[in-house]
Every structure is written in C-alpha cells, then in structure tokens.
Image 1 (spheres, rainbow over the protein chains, first blue to last red):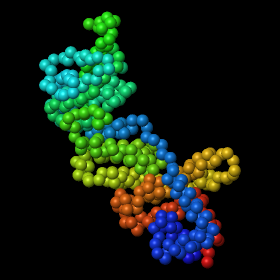
Image 2: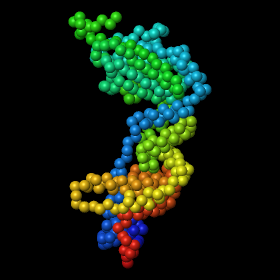
Image 3: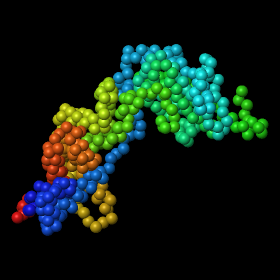
Image 4: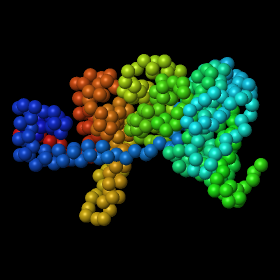
Length: 220
Length: 187
C-alpha cells in the first residue's frame, strides 16, 4: 500500500473499520511510513479537538422561557373559553386545606382561614384548583414566605411548573416545613396566555417552646 | 421535583412540555454546533418549538422522540441557511484567521490552545451548513453513522463519503495538511 492508498483509507483506519487485507496493508504502511504516521497523529489531534470543543451554556432559564413563549404564541383570544373568562373570579375556585398526609374532603367554602403549624413541623398542604374546562400549558408559580420551606428543597422560595389543568379538581400537594416562628403568605399564581390569577394562603408558624415560656408573639 | 411533590393529580404526561422538555438541552447543543453561537442556537430552538407546539398530536405518536426532534431541528436549520444564502466560504478567505500560529516552548500553551480552538471554530463556520452539521454530529457530538442515517435521512455510504470530503476540507481550512503537493504521492 502506498501513501495515496493509505490516505484514501485514513478515516476507516482511524475509525477501526478496516478489515482483512486492507486492514493489514494499512497497518503495515502506517508502521513503515513516518509521513503517514504524522498524518494520523495530526488527524487524531484534530478529532480530539473537535470532541473537546467547548459549548457555551444556554442563557439562564432558557428552557422554561422557550416553552412558555411557544405556549403563549399559540394561546390567543378565543382559543379557550376558559382563557376568555380567566380574569373572572368565578373562573377558578380555590379551596385550600391542610392535612397530615391524606387528601380528605374539602373544607367548607369561603376564604381559607390560613394554616397554623409549629416550627420544625412538616405539614402537607393541598392546594385544590377547581377549573371549569381543560387548560393545556398553564404555568403555576409558587412563592413561599421566608419562615417556611419545602421539604427536600431547603432555601428554595420560588417554584415554577408548567402543566395541564384538567377540568374539575386539580390537587397540588406541598410538603411545607416550618422554619421559624412568623406569619406570612404563600402566593400561588396561575398563568395562561396573557392572563394571570393569584391566590394567597396565610401560613402561621408558631414556636411551641416560646409559647410555653410565654414569649410567643401574639399576632391576633 | 416530581419525585417529591405531587403535581396535579391529572397532569398529562404527554403534554407538549412533558414531551419536549427532556430533550431541550440536547437540542440546544445541536443548535449550538449548527450555528456556532449561543444566541443563534437559542433562536433556532425557539423557532422549532414555535412550529412544533400546534403539532403536539404528531409528537405523541412518535416512538423515539430524540432523533425525530434532531431531524426537525436539522431541517429547520438547513432551510434557514438556504433562505439566507450565506457564503460559507467567506471566513475561509480570511487568511489571518486561519493562518497557522507559531508554536514554541513557552508557558503560553493555554493561550495557544485557545487560539487553536478559535481557529477550529472559525473553520467549522466556514464549512457549508450541511458539512458543518455532519462533522458536528459525528466528530463533535459522537453520533454514529447509523444514527445519522436515521436523523439526516441520507444513505450510509453517502454519509461516509461526505464525511471524508468534509474532514479533508476542514484540514485544508486549518492548514493542517502535513504534505505539500509534491510530497503527497509516494511509490
């Protein structure tokens, strides 16, 4: 095998896909020809550089932003009867109750009184969204007050999901942990197209020891 | 997050977001290799999502989504470059960008590596779009020719010969051919 023949088989030689006589001939030529060995080294170096080419990461939040924009572009007026009436307080009814692990019957209708819990206690808070019609591609955002956190996600105060809402009852279960004695609000926002609706839930965390010692803050 | 928090009890696992989100990072990588820059890559992926969103019913029927999405991205990229009628050889005419840098035994090895990477990136941008896609997918991202046959819908033999020609062209652009013409042919 001469240099021209070897060069014509260079890719297969480097890829290890030569077999039989061509493989033997190429290997023999490679061992005997310093110029072709330099060529192989050069090509291997090029391939290494290609594999190691750095990639600039996408801008922060790109994936969520891109999906949201795609959804918003196709969510125009008239696309959903729900979207048209989204701003109406009657369009979504929100009932909230807190239970220790199981979803039970809904609390009586009316504004929620809020949720009381103790420092270091974990409470399963179920947010129930009643929607009149199916919504595809809604964005749900949650903001937690600083005196609570989500179990397993220390330090996270905001969460965002993109999800479909089924007609009827949709339950979001949040494992809330009380971090410090304080009172604040959990804010839930639902966005669809250009519409947004917001709900607030009072979260009152008490320190049992402070109460015992008579140093708890009376927020009544 | 889904493993810890129960999201909506009747959330559809086949929603557009659920179908596409697991592949977005991969699509961005491909788009970056195709276009050579973050902004253009994000624009390309965004445009793909705009076009796919109303076609979620089609996505739900695809058995293996990643190669399908990769092909859609590739087609979109190639269509875009054809519309732009860009001159893929423009960069190649800039000899200053592609001229070999002198190397030496200095502590500037890292700077030399950076320059080499820049030259390689510029050389890739100087390839025709289809050539750049092929080298990016095979040599940079590690797709096998069999996978590329499915993604690009080009026969295996054609892919091999195109890849061979493209690598040769890339070497030429980088001036990494070790042989002068008179040394090319030996007995």
